[in-house]
Length: 469
Image 1: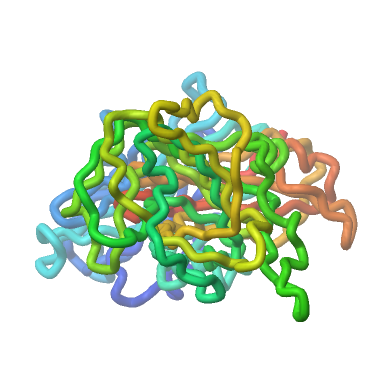
Image 2: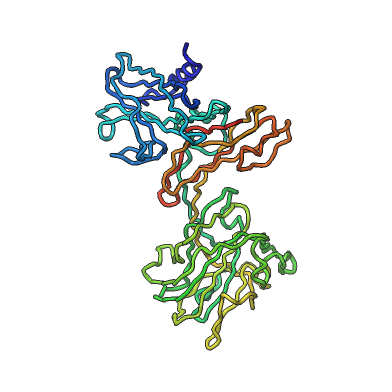
């Protein structure tokens, strides 16, 4: 008598897109030493091969992206010729336990196809968790995420796995129309005598939508022509801040109604409480006239360390420019947000003077502030796709942990979190350990798929295995 797997596999194969051949379905979890059921559908009478590996890739090969890592453990576990009906039903023998408590295998099938890259067509990737017979494994096998009740951001066109969205890029040009364009260039951080300048940009200025994004580039707008210049040392720190300058002026007084809503002169007070600023760049800064973009913007150095803006708070940019032999002939374009007062401060700074250089790495307090806002361009990348599973009952057995079967491109990552529900409306926080939901009646899984920042390639998840004692 066939296991219940075959009924489920048949339903899944019937629901798969008809053009997707070959189609492989493997029993997702089995105890060591037991038999594992598998079904392969492909072109009738054609040769096939099914391979297994301990890594899910992806691996580029001859124009295709294989869902196998092609590690030294790669092995052919089945090969032959498909029946006249194009069907291969097999029971594989799982190996005995070999020391590790659990083992995750990845499988994929291959058949000849003249229309496919390199003449080979591939099935979707499958995963199999081998575990001790005493353990209970609840498998979230993801075939059609939307139909299975998963919510969030994912590629809904992909069948057979949960596919994250590729990285999405956008550029926010900040030229606040409410401000009065200042008719003179402002040196800002580009002071050859040394400078420390903190500037704040509100979430609304950044076009934020509450979604985390990585800052990929920052550019300043030139006031007038750009000249070649060389600064010996520039540091840029990014952080969130609770400061939200309100530039509203009184109807009759024309004075700011909320003068204390901006930055303060104590540099260390302006970042959000408890947050350590991220040093995204430190090194020389070379300005070249050739780097001026057609839109009038000039890039600061590319970030060396990623900073993830949370999409909610204001963004604080802290520039530290060391004194050097630079010419200092470049000026930036700014806008005055309130004409009757320097407050609220959108910028606080200390600047060196000829013969009185400033060390920006030791100064802790600004000598001046104002509500001039630098025209700026910030390039963002949204790499995160976050998906939440439906609630499911938790077994009486205590949880051990979870195993994720994923295909992760270089530079990408997958994170899994869990939360429990004791009763309707009584929901715990998201935690990284399945053990934390031990006392709950139900549990839920959240999967975060982070795409690679450089290539944009996104990871995918075939299944999440929840293991209980």
